[in-house]
Amino acid sequence: MKIKLTPPPSARSALAARHAEAGRHRLAAQAYGWAKFPSLADGPKRTALARQVEQYALAAPGFPVEFERRTLTVPYHGGEATLPIHLIAAPGLPADAPVVLASGGVDSWKTDLHGMWEQLALALPARLLLFDIVGTGETAHLPMTPDGGAEVIAGLVAFARTIGNGKVGHFGISMGGYCSARTGLTGAVDASVVLGGPVERSFAPGRGFAFGMDGIVGNALGFDAMPSTAAREEAFAAFGLRPLLDQNANGPMLVVNGTEDVHVPLDDTLVFEGRRDTRVELIPDTGHCAISRFDEAMAVIAPWLKDTLIG
Image (cartoon, rainbow, N blue to C red; front, side):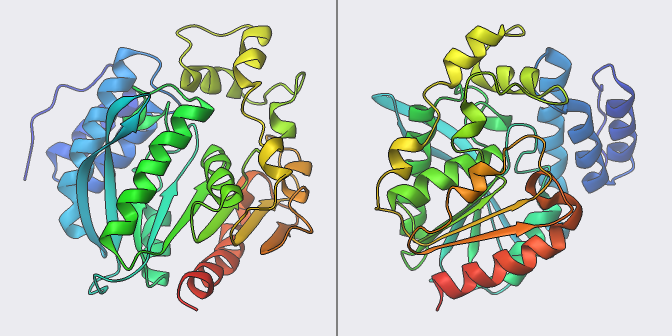
């Protein structure tokens, strides 16, 4: 199926449009993903995201996994909010399988990470519910705040319990790992995986950001211009999970990261050592989210999720 498009004014969007016109929809979705990276800071990037989603949906019939796109309505600040989600699973997965919520972080969203999600879905006897954390991707209309994010995810967990056997896991990457740390520490899910998640020291005053992450995070927080250090630190002050770390209510948790992470201090992984029902894995000689040794991380994560949710 060929579609005529008027691409946003960037070389990557132009490349994506050529792929789309040639019917190479998955490649087009990837190229539009590059065009809108790393945040939706202007009109062309928002247009690129819309085009990415369009091409991704056209590519879906060729995926090696079952795929469904839905729009959910969840409670939010006394009202409701809507957000698109993707459900994927290995072909023929029984309807009564567990469900695992999964998300990336502030600059890598559910559509961008499709290859990773395919790998996980094919390795797990569970259905994945993929979403963008608040302040990012197709949930960018909701600013990234601790309370709003928790409320939206609680709605997703409630929905997930109705579409499988009632068991729900949560796998979060980077800032998504902050979200899965919260659901794990509160016992809101039956299994929580935190991959490179910031939880405490990352939000301390004076921490700063590397490689342009201050602008990316500022965009997710809802700033429409580069925030000052003081404004960013004030916005982040409420994110630290120390009150939850001081409690003993967590469910089963797996916390993983690379030892050379420049974005998330090592302490934000080591702080979980010694907790009940918690396993901590540090992967040497790799950085944020163990990305350069990701197969090793997945070799720990997939079996742990399977054993914890299935037994």
